[in-house]
Length: 417
Ligand code: NAI
Image (cartoon, rainbow, N blue to C red; front, side, top):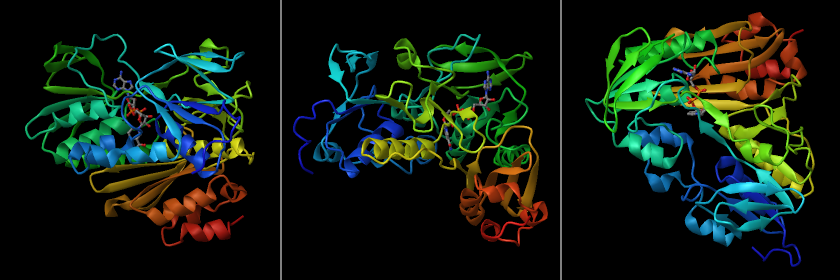
């Protein structure tokens, strides 16, 4: 790659070296952005992938090297300056520079906030030092060292982290109890039918799942020895993980006067009200092209697609962001794939037979097909990503959707009125 364009000394500064930030830097170079590209990250590690941290890495089938997004030399070869192990502490919008925690100032022509999210802390309960969380590679190392045969693992939160870790821990022989505050697991994202299916599979694997349940206190300090629940019952534990969701990192934006409303507010172009600042990934609140409502998505696909979108705009291609969201999770031998986002409480129908281990749940927002959750039915998932968000998704025959012998892709091509 040639040197940055002479005279362009204020390039793009990206704050946050998670998936959204790193992908922005990579996409800018792929698209031949001529200026400097600087990627600022609070972690000391080179940019790495988080999805395996709660899956293959915990099971031991992937090591540290396999997590790296790109080999070490890639960043220098592509003239992406990595500023690691340091935080951005202030944005000066007038002067167009950010200040780092070590006092350095970085000027920008465009600033991309890819600040991610941080794990929520358990409200109202003192948390001993030995209790673990899972977000970084360091967290995953600490957890992995404790997942051995005979360990007694209690996981607070039956969301994606909780259930993926439960599956990995069972495979490594630990005993596992889930404490979930809601009346079903993974309720933030999944339909009731799919929650039930995954609960059943986890219970078959020996996971104890306690729903509508809260922690009253922990015992122990560096070594946790037990958990007491709100109803007074006691659970033995030698390892406790908390995974009760995340809060977006918005303080930096808030402090410099950008609009924050449970996420950094951006338009369909992913720009804030300051046209020199974009926000993407977990921290960004953006308009859903289908419903028009603002939402924030916590997913790799969203982080990656929004990174591409910003890189496109910064290299002269200005289309808005309108991707269909999708997610996946692997637990035991189950491959869960989700396309679209459904409101909670909407209608749903099941396609295929859960007892056969291969089925989909179609979820609606009024008449519109809003999401399809599939287990071991990849063709449904691929078709769903094409179908959701189109006009056809408002006019589908529910009988056809429910019939697993009718390929979903045929409905993409010829929706029934
Ligand atoms: P989550 O939002 O998926 O699940 C949190 C769970 O904790 C919810 O079921 C919630 O009801 C429960 N909860 C909340 N407060 C509680 C309390 N006081 N006591 C007991 N339970 C409580 O968040 P999670 O699992 O922490 O994951 C963190 C982030 O990582 C999310 O952004 C998630 O999307 C992402 N992630 C995504 C994966 C995937 O897409 N496959 C895998 C792992 C993580």
